[in-house]
Image (cartoon, rainbow, N blue to C red):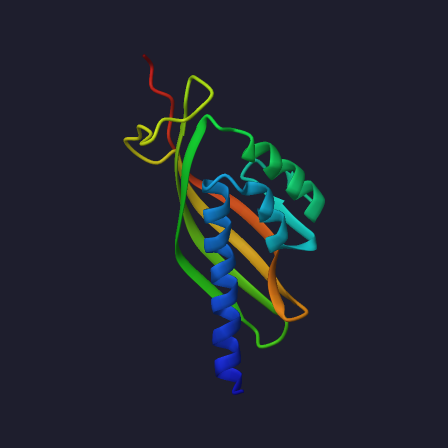
Amino acid sequence: MSDQLERLLAERACERLLLEYARLVDSGHASAIADLFTEDGEWIGADGGGMHDKEEIRTAFTAREALGRRQSRHVITNIIIDSDGSDTARGVAYLINFRHDADGTVAAHPAPADHPKFVGDYHLTFRRVGERWRIHTLRFDLAFLRRRRDA
């Protein structure tokens, strides 16, 4: 296989991890996000806090999975992945997050939203583990934040 084709396949596999991440968190299967990370993977939030291995990631996203009152859509776009031709890659992508937290225990469908909750950038590193690509680090930087409106 040519180096160019191998690089293209690696970059597409990493891009797909991001899209799968969004689908899992929004479809009620957030705990499975841990399986997208390497064993020593890190998820770092905009506040600097984070999770520092696969099991911490699973624990945190299991808690997110239990939030039945939250309706969200993680729109990931402007994805750029660069593979160096070995077993590592770097990437950046925009995240636009629409989110509504219901007053009760179950989110309304469709949920009300007049604009995104927040917008920011994912900065990522990826590693090939065996034959599969995994997220090694995901860092989120906040660019825009919806403020609470006074009632």
